[in-house]
Amino acid sequence: MQYMLIYHETAEDFTKRTNPETAQAHMGSSSAYIGALGQAGVIVSGNGLQPPHTGTSVRLRDGKRLIHDGPYADTKEHLGGYFIIDVPSLDDALEWAARSPNAATGTTEVRPVLPPLGK
Amino acid sequence: MQAVQEARGTAERAARESFGRLVSWLAWQWRDIAAAEDALSDALLKALEAWPAEGIPQAPDAWLLAVAKRQLLQVARHDRVRFDPAVTVLFEHEGTHEAPPDIPDARLKLMFVCAHPAIDEKVRTPLMLQTVLGLQAAEIAPAMLMSPSALAQRLVRAKQKIRDAGLRFEEPETSELPQRLHHVLESVYGAFGLSVDAVDGAEGRMSDLQQEAIFLCSVVCQLLPESAEAKGLLALMIFCRARQAAQVSADEAFVPLQRQDVHRWNREAIIQADHCLWSAAQLRQPGPFQLEAAIQAAHCHRLFTGVTPWRAIDDLYRQINQYFPTAGSRVAGAVATAEAGDAAAGLAQLLAMDSKRLQGFQPWWVARAHLLSMLGRLDEADAAFQTAIGLSTQQRIKDHLEARRQSVRKA
Image (cartoon, rainbow over all chains, first blue to last red; front, side, top):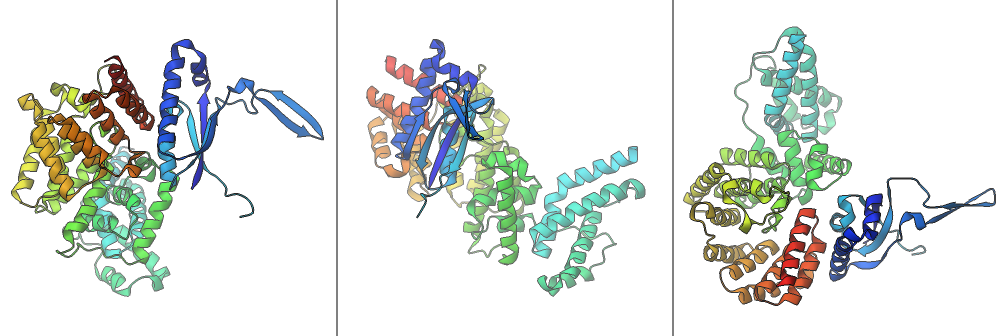
């Protein structure tokens, strides 16, 4: 069963990536987590994302393009990355979500992936 | 106003103290847990209305039971087809006004139903907590790592299954008893929050429901005094709880068992657990919980002797792993072998385990890192620590492992 693990991070977590005092520990915990995912052989695909201020949102209204600088919604937590994993059950996916470093400060959401269309 | 408060207080006390006993008895008579719970909740509401006006009855339990039974009968009259006439007749013939004799304690019967092999393993523990102790799904869900609504749904389904599949509210036959009791005890242990797979370092996973688990186990001990395993489990949980305060240092860091300050262990609790294990041993029915408790007893004896008897612990794990192996006990056994002086043999035990199942098993990676560093194979130890950190959920454990990894790197 495939699940998407969606890592919602807080603004503080995003600044930890670049703050020289915290960057090493932050990257260390991420790479330990990703290493363990890889070791377990459950990764289908996944990526980390640049911080939310690098995003650009597009909406089409009445045929007009509305381009908006930054993320779509002004929330406390933003998408920091995602993985699609293949595990036997939701319980396994939740276990991996609990292990993610950002679960301690932000939120890790688990969503089952729809099977490919046409099957 | 005072009468209202007093009546409310009495009703709430009755709810807490006797909910399990009353629901068990009603469910046993009625063979429907959900209906019994509904009827009792109704009776409690009626008590809150009636008692302030009429005064608190002499036997509040009996009053609640009588009202709950009337409620059940009313439902049954509306729904005759579904109910076994033999059961409703039983109720109708009983006078509901005179004080009934002592209510037989049906909690054990209810526990056997909750932990029946036909019930989904994952729902047995919460089902028992809800029906026997009257806890709400929202209180139980966090400890079970589930969402309250998902848990509530599973509980409803389990109760429907019990009713519709006609699971018997009886204590099992003597020949079945040990196996069925083991299911009950495992579910109780589940509430404690330590899975049987837990090893050193996993004590941080103990749940907020420890007190409830210890209470459930003491009910089993009381109702089945001849069960050595129930006493063994009780001892095991008391040993683990006795050390809990020492597991976190003043600066909030995780302290592994070996580094814990024994003065922060609860001496009285350890002595109590020792007695409990001793009386279990007198019954001469060895079992996995008693062996686990004996290992915890051995660890706790550092309080009295200043040293950990690793050879004895290694021997105890050999017995567990011969008769009742789990992934956790095999990992812990390998560590015990290493601590008893033979790190190479310990590592060989680890490597002999089925590697596919272990890729996501944090204790295996912690043990691997520990034994590799004992053997001076520091690069491999470093990599294993990395994986172990990635597999940990608690920040405290991650920090502890990271500190160990750094100290291995410097060595």
